[in-house]
Image (tube, rainbow, N blue to C red; front, side, top):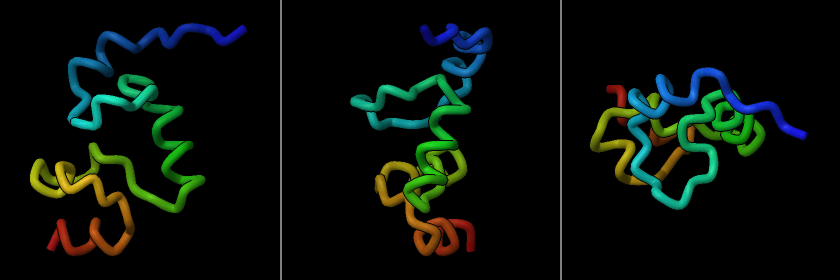
Length: 66
């Protein structure tokens, strides 16, 4: 059985991901692990505009930050 995240409320109050179908919202450890496995960057690392593109690629991240 999975243990509940003790930081879920704090995480949710700071989460900037707009992908409403995500089952990892507020579960930062799971989110980071998932995107790392997929060779992507989590949405919360992007600017607001970059996050809304839903393109989590390294290339998009680099262009979003420049």
